[in-house]
Length: 222
Image 1 (cartoon, rainbow, N blue to C red):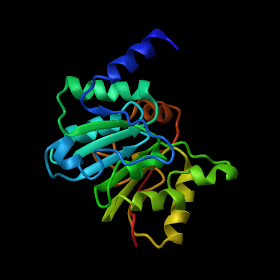
Image 2 (tube, rainbow, N blue to C red):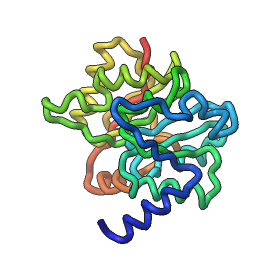
Image 3 (cartoon, rainbow, N blue to C red):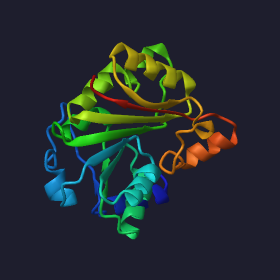
Image 4 (cartoon, one colour):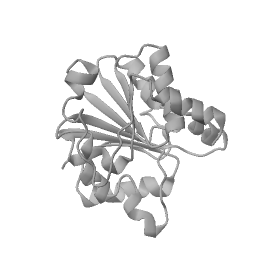
C-alpha cells in the first residue's frame, strides 16, 4: 500500500464528517441509525444519500447548492472518500457527511423513513447476467432502499451505460413505479439543469470520449 493511501486512511480517522462502521455479518445497527438528524446534523432537514459516491464530488456540490437539506455520501473505498470528507471540512459544509461502508449494509445505518432521496451516480452496471443481483436498481436493492426511505422517496440514477439505463426502465415497469424525468442523452435534453449538469471527474472523461449520459428520476414506491 502506497504512503499517500496510508496517509489518507490516517486522516480519515480524524475527520468529524466521516464515519467508518466496523460491521460484522450480519451487521448490527449503527448508533446513528434513526438519529442522524439529532446527533449528526443537528437539524430536521431532509436526508439525501449518494450511493457509491467515490470522491464525493456530487454530494459536495449538492450540499453546497442546498443548505436546507442534508447529504451523506457512501462508498467502500476509503482513499476516495478522503477527498470528499476533506473538502467538506475545509469548506465548512455543515450539511454534509460520509460513511465508509458497503451499500448492502445501509439498512443497519438508517431507520425506516429516515432518507428522502437516493442518488445513484455512475455505478458499476454489472452487465453480466450472473451479476444481475448486484445492480443497484435490481429488485433486491430497490427492496433494500424501501427499508429506510420515506413513502414518497425519490431515486435518481445517472449513468453512462445505456444497457443499465434500459434495465432500470424494465425494473420500473415491472414494479409499476412512477417516472418523473428520463432521458438517454442528458446533455441534449430539455431537463438539463444546474443540478444535473454537475460533473464528476469520470463523467467529464466519458463526455470527452463522446459517451452519452442517461438520467432517470422515479418514485420508489408505486
